[in-house]
Amino acid sequence: MAYKLIEEFNKDLNGHDIATFTGALSPLLVTVPWSRNPEIPITTICISKGEELHLIADEYYYHLCSEDVFRKYVEKKVTKKELLDAYTSYASSAQTVYDKVVTLSLSTIDEKELLDLLNKVIHAFEPVADTVYIETLNYDMALRVLGEARKAVLDKVWENSIHPTFLSFEGRWLSKLIELVKGTEDPQLLVRKVKYIYTDYHWTKNETEILSKLQDVKNNLAEKQNELETIYNDTEKRKSEYNAWFATLSDEEKYISEYIQMIMMLRDLRKDPIAQSQANGIEIHGRRL
Image: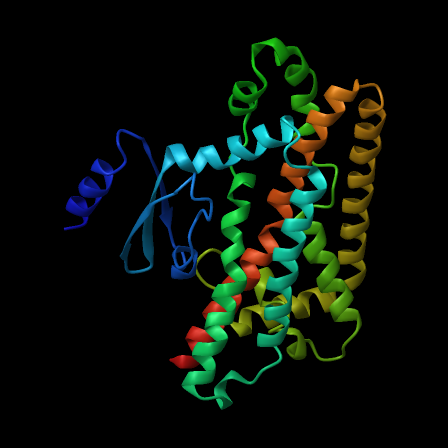
């Protein structure tokens, strides 16, 4: 039956290739549209078998999201600030809902309230569709947009621009854990606040595992702080080297480099709102059970 569905879906793609994502993926990832742009309709089909889910999408339109936004940026139809503001709005909304859910005693509210809360989680997650463009930018796509006449520009900036000059999610999350652990005597009180840090695309770690990890941070605080300091120092070194190189570029080279670096940063930052929405959906579902 599954193969027949895929065959029918494939026929509707008008010759486009398919992109397949397989793994322990949460159903929350498929409750929202992948694109809210009517000109770029990313149709998907999902087949679930136990904990494994196959998500199949129209690869052409999936990659076109990234190409479309980069082209608009190159043609100055959208600015970096506008893209960053849109992302910040989405991330802020996800954070607000996450903070609300983790302060509630879900076992004491009725099913209607739980469903209303789940709807809020899904609604906060929906703008992730507007950030799909962050996922697939690559050299060939960038060259297609810029054209062969500007290949030298892309070649000059690509390699330096794709390396992170920002604090990665490992550093951000370690910093958050250290901050929280230092501010409380009882790590148990922090478990729900940090669930998103221990969430993958399918499920969160159980509360016993999370508490154990928090206790490890607390028991080895000096070591963790040294680890974080090393991460900060490495980040600052990369940033300093990038800034020195960036200063030597032409205006056009800087313009392209800034976009590529922004995409690399947003790919990393985007882990937070996605994980927060995942953790919320999982917790609400678990309380219903």
